[in-house]
Amino acid sequence: MVHGGEQLTRIAFGVPAASEADRVDALRLLEADSELHAEWILGLAMNRAAPDEVLRRVFTVDPLPEARHWLPHYRLPPRTAEAAVAHPDPRVRAMLAQNCSVPSAVLAVLVEDPEPRVRRIAASTACESGVELPAELTVRLATGPEARMRYWAAGLRGLPEQARLVLAEDPHPRVRAAAINSWSWPRLRPEVRAAAEGDPDPEVREAVARATHVDVPLPTTVEGFLAETDGRRRYDAASTAPVETALARLLAAHEDSSLRLGAARDPHVPATIALGLAADPEPSVRLAVSLRPDVTEAQRTAIDYTLQQGREPVPPWVKERFDDPDALREIAASSHVLLRRGVTRAPELPADVVERLAADDDYFVRLMLCENDHAPHELLMEMFADRRGLSWGMLAYRRNFARPGLARFADDPNHRLRYAALFDPEAQPELVDRLSYDEEDLVRRHAAADPRLPLPRLVELLGGDGLPRSGAGNPALPAGLMHRLLDVAGVVPY
Image 1: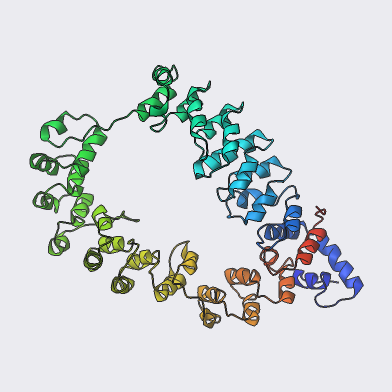
Image 2: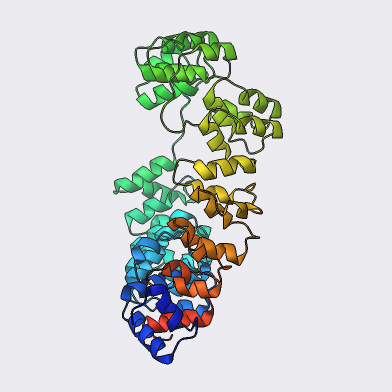
């Protein structure tokens, strides 16, 4: 008997009816296919409808297939993360502890894992991701015997204030340094501050220096600027300080192009002086002049500026006008493409501004507008169909991406639009079934994971030449069949 993987699963799992001999033979072949078992296990692990009993069985599998490729990175369903905590392999639990999307209750279990490496990774993830752990747990970590855990405890949300202050007196210098900052410093007892200032460890003294640092005003005069020896402060003064006119002239004529760039950006430099840089030999300086708020559209258009590759930050003065509808209209009509791109970031855009930006002749203006909640459906669909870049699929989750009616694209030559048809809540099972045979892998995979897919076809796709991972991840897969897949894969009952 020779069958393809899809036909084998139909026979083995009773769709359609087959003789008992055929079913036994099909099961024997499926039981021998370890690669297929791995695909089922991965699909079930990510199936948001999998019962707890199924997930607990999945996370007894050792080794867990491809764990390093997905467990630390994917946004796991909460129940999947809860089941994974019990995996017998500490390496798997360590991978789970790296995942910043796991619920705080899961991290709380992992920071008290019997394996030290798991505990440390979980504590660092909670600290770096700002996850708030129960106060009593943070206190246990802060008072425990392990210096690394006390170090991470110093940065945990939920650690009571008194426990945080006690860490500034910890025997380990790295912990003391972590506990000393601008918040804790004024709250420490005088004798603790004195000890920290004279601490033999340089890391602690550096923490004290940061905690007690007071910003010195930037120079605004020629004399003050010439006396300044810190290169970073000289640039900050050139680009942000309320410089006097004499210093503005010195900066605009300076041989150092970074200081001329600062002068071109500094809103306190008079426009008459800044416009003297409109023909500067440095392209970045000319671009900075062209983006100033005090330059007229005629002056802006006359500047020979060059756009850099990649995204440019939104000019601060444009951000300051985000709440002014008339200013947004004016900026959206600018001849300067970077200003039009910048205005797409405004959280509230008037309808007429949205309409203008959606029709802009600059591709990146339209693209950046798609990241705004006000982007119209038509533009989202245009970019969804043709956008260059890896994140085009996220456009389907924008607020104005209208899903009803997308089934009309089921036969479109563009495979992205056929994929979009699967987002239509009114798409019928027959359409999903048809798209599960699509020539494009993306379309087939999403059809295989669609809960509207008819069960006979779903069972077929669990086979080795189908889409076993997507099929096992389909939330409409019956729980009994989930268990049956694990039985065939040799996973013991929990």
